[in-house]
Image (tube, rainbow, N blue to C red):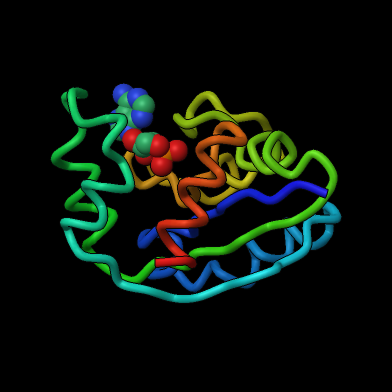
Length: 133
Ligand code: CMP
């Protein structure tokens, strides 16, 4: 069993898509181990996304993710990290495959509805930030 962090981002929370996105996880054998709705501060967002601090989109990314409530979820299941990334689809929804969460729900590369940890190290770090501090 593996765990990963999923975020349902403010654009999806605002459009009442929490249930539809959680259903995708559950129908694909990912279990909700922890879940909470939270409005993060700009400082928290900057820490969460610190690996992107040199990227040109960093400022907009942090202000967007702290602009309204999001839902943080610990997902658990076999191969949960990769499975969640497959279910999300490509970062840019215009490149995402049919049936993926981002293809179905995302608005743009910024408002792309969900985040998922990309490795075992980042899942530990991200779960710790949202649920253990
Ligand atoms: P996420 O998986 O949350 O990780 C970092 C986020 O930066 C990404 O989703 C996108 O929403 C956002 N982003 C904005 N512009 C870009 C870009 N050019 N490349 C990658 N991510 C981007």
